[in-house]
Length: 234
Image 1 (cartoon, one colour):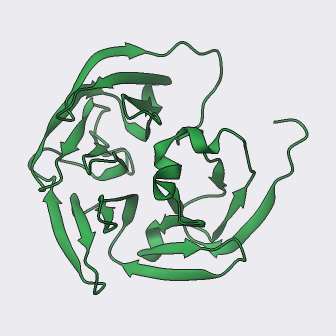
Image 2: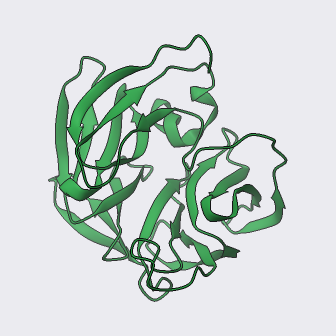
């Protein structure tokens, strides 16, 4: 991105992941520090939830926060009093950690998982799935044969789910039916080397999971195109 200035928004993080823009603030998970954070444009960082290995973030239509717990393979829901309760149990559908999530405007969530022991390399790579979590917490498989689905977005009209298959070096799209199920799977043509997260709001975590790192930001006019980052404005 020639001519774009990149600045450090916050440092001292361990592994920032799952950035989301909501109500004028950047939300993200600091996975190995076991917390969900909210960073205001003024630079104030607040820990809004604590749980083991948080990852993907999203919100129900009534504003309650959803958080993926990677190792537990569950989606937690934060109640108005701040209590975290289990919203959905993904463990019957995922043998290895769950990670990224995007939530549609109707409250339907889509969650990816590793498919194999990607962190330690003790098993061979295997295909995983994208799981659909309905607003009532019911879970089923929305799409299978996905190679590390990590980075998902829904188009502004709510009609298309886009998934970055990080270990397959491709971006896959699906039509969303009215009930949140998926159809018309296709690979999006691109000649670019894409990041493993969504491109709509490019706040980029740097460094490794084992050392403190930082969150960098570079504004883009495309940010409002993706509901992963702009749902709060609705």
